[in-house]
Each structure stands twice: as structure tokens, then as C-alpha cells.
Image (cartoon, rainbow, N blue to C red; front, side, top):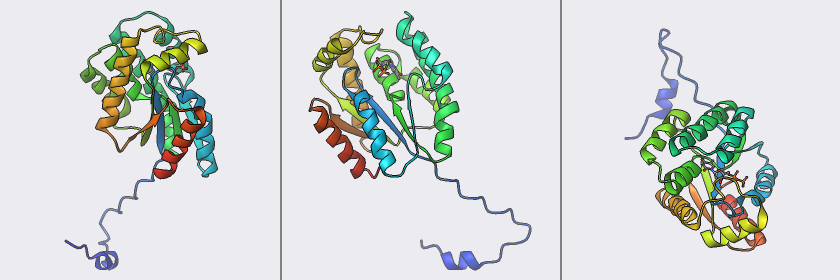
Length: 228
Ligand code: TYD
């Protein structure tokens, strides 16, 4: 059915009719980076921020777990204290709740572009896939904490677990997750793959095995082709 737009625009509005609701202001866009430890996403975050700024966007760059003073404190506990899987899930969502409320939602509301190093896909991949924690519970926590908020685009740095392990061992002192065995990272990787396949319009897979320069070129091509 076609809408008689002109007629609707010129029709008189009865004086007692409620004022038409103002259209909701568009929010900024939300870009997240994901991948197993050692996949190299953190080394590209700066060039991604530069790409976005070069396109005239105001960028709020942040990370998870963390991004606020409280969430950074929770991150320290999360990465270094032993705890069971439910505590781990509750802690990461508590940090996320503070981060969304204090940083992400306000930035999106002022139309900034949010660039976040990891978000909830990491929880489904690490706690759900890696630890085998109940994904139904994770989905409930996600609903409570995010109220429907999701990244608009997620760059998934995909690298075989064995190669990521080599890169990690050369690079840094491991935290609680980086201590996990290869089977753990295989499960994390599979969970990321399943999520990317389930939501191809949100995810873009980056072949992270390539050289840093080739990875940067892939990232730039994805951002351009998706209109960022
Ligand atoms: P990250 O900041 O990428 O580590 P680094 O600074 O060492 O590169 O992520 C910290 C770790 O936390 C990483 O091993 C993944 C894990 N993690 C989860 O297990 N669940 C989550 O929801 C998030 C966000 C991270």
C-alpha cells in the first residue's frame, strides 16, 4: 500500500492531538575487536582508530574487561584470582554493566564511534566455549546488562590456536586465560567461528595469519567496504 505522504503532511493536526514524537536521534556506531589471545588484534587497534578519525569520526577507544576505574579493578581480579565459572561470568558482566553505563552508552548517545577491544562475544567464546559455562545463563546476563545493545561491526581476528600459542610465548607473561592449554583455545576459536557464522552481517573475519601489513590492509578494506 502506498502512503499518501503529501496529504498526510498537509492534513490539519487537531489542536488537542499530542505533539508528534521527535524522531530518535541516531546513535554513534559501535565497533568491537575479537579473537583468541595472540591473534594480534591489539596491535591493530591504533591504526583502526586512526582510520576512523581520518574519516572525521569522534572515537571513544576502550576495552573489556575494563574501560572504567571500577571495571579495571574487576579486570585485575578477573585475570589473576582463581574463581569458579559462575563467579567469572558474573564478574565480567558486572564490569560490563559499569562500562556500558558509564562509557559506551553515553558515547553512542553523543554520536561518537565506540572502538572496543573485546566485548560480549569474548564472554560467549571464553566462558561459554572455553570453560563450557551455560550459554543460556550468559544470554540472560547479556540481556540484563546490555538491554539489546550490540556492536554494529565485529572484526574477528582468526588465527589457528597453535600459531597464536607460539606468538604468545614469544610475547608476554601469561594471565589466567593465557595459561590455558591448546584444547581451551581450540574451543574458544570454535565458539568465535560459530558466532561469526550465525551473524555474518555483524562479523567480518580477518585472516590474522598474514603479515601485519597484510592484516592491516584487510582491516582497512573491510572498514571501507562496510562504510566505516
Ligand atoms: P585482552 O585485554 O585481550 O588481553 P591482553 O591485554 O593480554 O591482550 O583480554 C584479557 C583476557 O580476558 C583474554 O584472555 C580474554 C579474557 N576475557 C574473557 O575470558 N571473557 C571476556 O568476556 C573478556 C572481555 C575477556
